[in-house]
Length: 537
Image 1 (tube, rainbow, N blue to C red):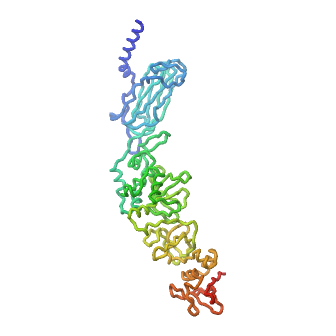
Image 2 (image 1 turned 120 degrees about the horizontal axis):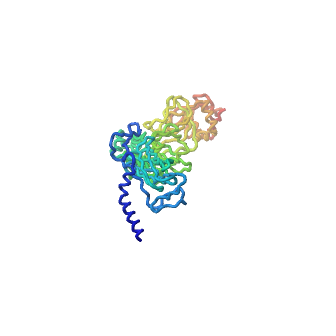
Image 3 (image 1 turned 90 degrees about the vertical axis):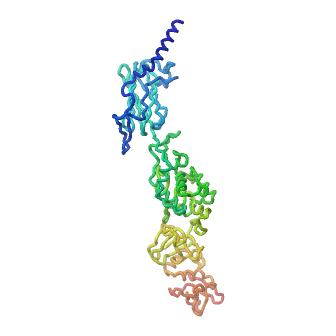
């Protein structure tokens, strides 16, 4: 009993002296030299300046409870130190996390020491992007688990190395790497300034593009980031911050940000953090379109990056030219950038029709709000009647320019006709370009014309190529199934819409000869009034 009492008194005395003894164990500078990054992003250590915010490495102290042993079968002391069994000196370090925040969360490092001969000298060296920013050395009297705590000042790749030297001079070392981020969050003033160059018009399509253009070149932060549970590094973005998820996926929040700063009401244009949710909301509002839709600047385009037709990425249509679509996308290679695709690209799975949303909001008229769906097959062929014929996005001379067809007589495929106005417009394909051409600028032969003439499209095209007919000739041929559009006056057939003679008639043979070409184009049965088209030879 007396012996036990003496042991307890001795232990109490040792514990009361521990703080003073611990301070005396630290060798070298009590605090690391201050450091920062220069304009080039290089870590610079300033040894002549007192640090402002640096927590030095603490004097190693045993971790309470069972330490992480190199050999789990080795016996341990209750105080947290392993029994010195001799053998090969070993050190193994474990970081509590492979991620830390500068000036906010420290790096906690456990050095597990075993083998060798006590006492041990432990040294910690910290390098940030290859530059040494801190070192400290301490002496410990036993093997076991020893904890270091270090608070980084700036972000970067921190390599922490612990070396241990035992009483015999044998030395071993181990190192680990910890990614350190630093706060680079922006604020509303920065966001507002970033879009200040955009000139808003009240047209949502134009304004969305204008805001998106101001953001081109913005990149996801490489210094302000988190590491998620899967070990994926996710950087800060102003779009996620504005939306409320500063480290989340951000292609869809980029769209929402652009809508916000384009002054588009939230209730009239849906927002969503997830791409699929945005597409669903547009569908619910009647503004969703499938991949066949012909987009225009300001529309929303959805992509499938996995090949499963489910939307996983989204962007803003900046322009459509010919058979190409040009976009501005957020979170494209971790930045806002321009991209180009073919209109029939496999990854395009749908669109958001902003014109339809504007129509619902009462901002545009019904005519301007029409939706174009590209047909699967052509309905005819046409030839330009002059040089420099313009193709346009919409059936209007005021619509945006798509492509200029330079040569007279250039062939185009007729995909559809628009007769909603006094002028007829044809939606055509010229080489790889899609757009509208005014009807009076084309010689048009439709499939219905070929059928009326008893010809195949190939035969009709061959006839057009050989004869080079006028619009009136094509129109006459289209009506050649009877005399309802033609009036026989003497030896001439007069087209009733123009009052002009189109062909001569031989009453003895019944042949109808085109007055411009001199070619026989049909035969008239005077008894019945039926006209039988002559198949071109």
